[in-house]
Image (cartoon, rainbow, N blue to C red; front, top):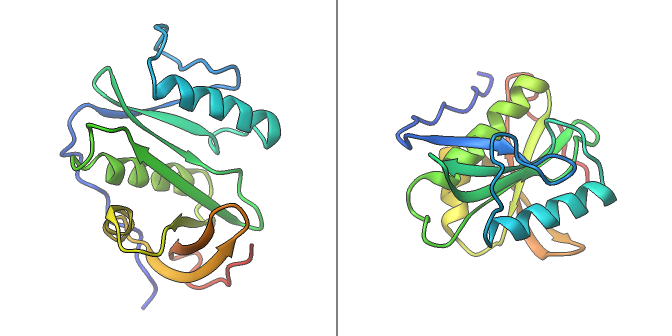
Length: 171
């Protein structure tokens, strides 16, 4: 039986939305200056765009709960060899509210809308943590452990899709 699409996360997090961080650091619909940690995220994202690529929708996003910035998430780069990696971070004070799960689920939805055949991955530290549960709830499974050049030993998670039930992961 082929793997099923990840289950849609119930939007119990009322008022949740993602807003793209543009190449110039602006966030459409939000003209006010952002406080830390959001302003730091924006600076780092713009720097990443200058070194990597700015190719929507494979970009960084700020997560909002109503009009309050509560976290950030991103594709670490455009897909390479049919594989894309997601990352997410809930800002301090907003943890344990389902926001990381909502961010991960929304990135999965964006990726699937853009390219249903893309393999979606994520990296976590090997020690069991909240991010493991976020990925499990979003439909990911632990694929392997690897020695990442910047992060050291990490777990690589993978979301199997009907279009790609088991393509081998390559760096």
